[in-house]
Length: 247
Image (tube, rainbow, N blue to C red):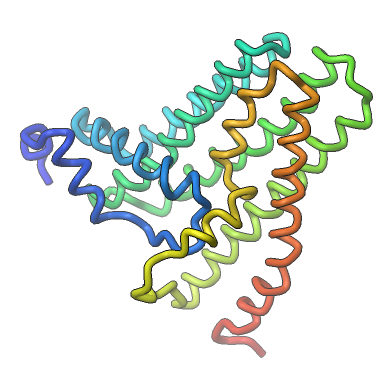
């Protein structure tokens, strides 16, 4: 599609067009499915109108998220810091959805773009939990045993991210793709896997002004994600064993 054609299309028209370029909602957590993807469509439509590339949107997403993490690291543990951090993280996450949607719309996706997106995500995930740990240490007088929660989250979040991304890549390498079932995605399943949702975790920073309350919510998400990963690892391993070419 040429730039003049993109410029002639309104943003609402592009949002409606993007609705036909969505990934499957099967297994998607509730916030990502019902909030982040629709919000990402709006940002993708704006990016399309501005003639931005998917990689440019990826970098904007990363910088927005890093700005939220910087606010968490440099400001005291108060309500304003929490609001600022949550807002920037939510915007960064919506832009993270927008880059893929823009790529599918324009046909501009590439292995390099996918690699860049995953690298930015890895930096963001690791740095966010490490910053929670450091900020709690610097700005609160909580018992230091609480710091084990963000320390554990670094391990669990990175294990989940790596296992999911590598599994997806290996399946594609062996020609295994998820086929649409034809049945609507389960809303109940989206709610049950909500603790694994990065977007929901972004919203917990609205509680940052009350560290014990924040940590309670944060710990619930960690426990839910840990349980999901522990249950998922055997299944994901069986999926790998079932790939073609196993000896």
